Image (cartoon, rainbow, N blue to C red; front, top):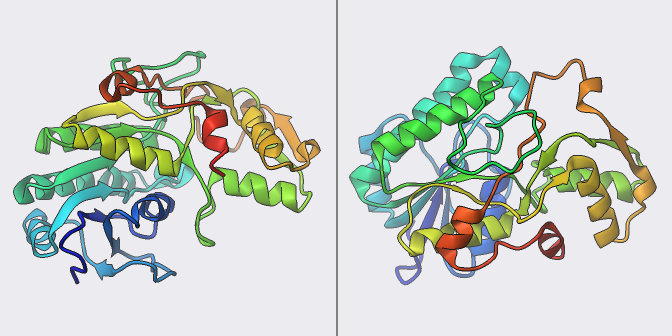
Length: 294
């Protein structure tokens, strides 16, 4: 299955995920790509695919070595907040326990690991949270993802853990947040977006670029990888409309408090990227900079 011994090989544990697609697309010219398929079949054939369970660290490590893997990007996760709340045991298995097992496999195989975490750890007060802030875990999804971080670092201190929120042009089966906004505006269908939820998103290609730059420079541990500035979901929709010259009148503001059926979740998820900026020695750029890449 190895196709090029001169290029470093990146393996994605969640091969059918949105981020695996965005990341692989961004790195395909400089790296070999290998996707791991689980229950969800990968509906495109751009890169090699292997079907493999993630619950046996020794078998995983042997596979990594056999396939000459240099970096494992652990994107496999259960990200549906409502489903996590309904099935906490499944959330704990996928987001926490499996993450620890993959980290152990990476340590045994002596390969680099990039673990994808979340920006879902904080709270209700508008702020910009650093890696040192005490997490506020408001639901099962957040609890399971934070436990996953802990297990990864316990098993493999050399791992890089990325707290982030990303977007970009995804495949047909995995629309990103920006895809949903663009599709609505192009079809002149109103889309309601929260004007009281704050975050610091960045485009998936830049997440990949900054994460690889960090591990190439020898950094490990927890890093916020995000844009420089804070924006609301509503303002983000308006920014996309402006950048792509789409009709902004279809972006409708609403409050998260009006969505009574949602599982409780944070409204302040903005991250500080100062640690990553200092480590890399350059800016991680603004939301406007990243939107130009759309």
